[in-house]
Length: 196
Image (tube, rainbow, N blue to C red):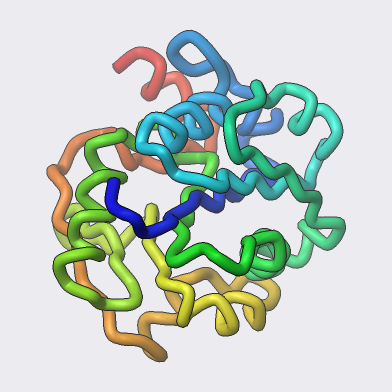
């Protein structure tokens, strides 16, 4: 990676109401959702890796295998929605970070390949936001330059990072249509994921 300092912000605070069990703890490959994403981020040398917990925070935090640069923060207002979790995580970003890649715990199939392409697209385009496109869908993970951090701090409720697309120039990063970015929100979707 270049001299740019790029980190990861992994959102793992939601109540997993449709799943019926905390998504960060669901088994995937040889680990669980949260550790799979932390490990993927560390392989691309993202640092820091900020994990935002909320629902069952202590159990989720205790399940995370430490890696270099890991920061675990608790969003005490996790029930307010994703915007509050993004703001909580953004407050933990060190001052010398150039950009962060926002990742969702319900996308455990995110690959090192995709993260690397996001970073390369960011370096080449010099746009403040790089968002993943799969077919017709714009989806996380999304890279945000530090110029976006103040706006991320102001997100509230269910507002996601997508709100910033109307505030900043952005570059789309095309990714193949496979199941690696499929959201896993229900038991049926989880069963489909582990049987793939």
